[in-house]
Amino acid sequence: MSIETVRLSEKAKGQLITVKKNTKIDNWNVLCRWALMLSLKEESIPPHEDIVTNSNVEMTWKVFGGEFSDIYLAMLRQRVKNDFGKIDEDELNYHFKLHLHRGISYLLNQSKNIDEMVKLAL
Image: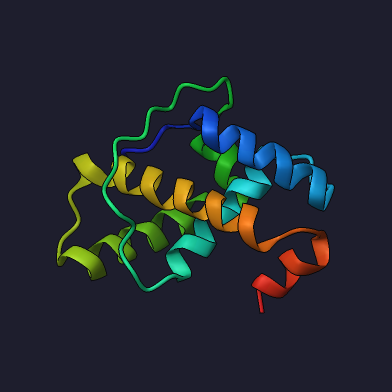
C-alpha cells in the first residue's frame, strides 16, 4: 500500500472546521471518509492540481479508514483503474489527495447541517 499518512491542506482544514461546526461531527477521520466517498461517487475525474498539505491535520491511513481501511483503498484503486485504465501505485497517494480535497469542498457546499449530510448518502 502506498498511502501511509493522510495530510490536509490549510484550505481543507478550514473547510472541515466549518463542516464540523455545522454537523457537530468532531472527528476529522469520519468527515474525511465522507469526503472521499462523495468524490469517488462523482463521475468526473478530479482536476489535476498541486495540493500542498501544509496544515497540522494528519492521521495514519489506519486511523483514516478504521476497520474498513482496506475497503476504502480497494475503492480508490478501482476508481483509478476505471479512470485511467491502470493503477500506478506511485501515483495512488496523489489521486487520493485529489479525491479527498475535492470531497471536502463538496462537504462544505452540500452539508449545512447533519440532516443534509445524511441525505448525501442516499
